[in-house]
Image 1 (tube, rainbow, N blue to C red):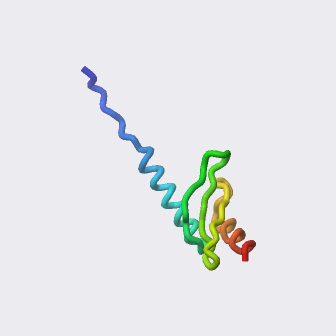
Image 2: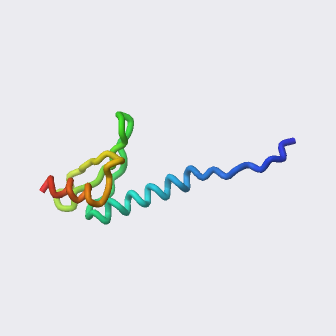
Image 3: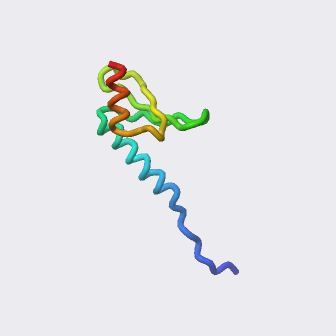
Amino acid sequence: MNTSARRPDIRQPLADYYLRRLMQTVELAGATFCGFQSGWGEDLVLFNHPTTHTTLALPLSETSVESIRAKIAACG
């Protein structure tokens, strides 16, 4: 008989937390969060330009409000 208590799996709540934070970062920069692209090296964060609605991307490790705004400004 196994009497040890099973530890709760906290991976999903943590993933949800980080996703919400990432979505907030994109929205604070003035863009619309689209999602992720992964599988070929570093994961990319996808977001839409606020006026042209072009989908842009940044590596996850470089994603910040400032970098998103710079990417938007570079695209006109």
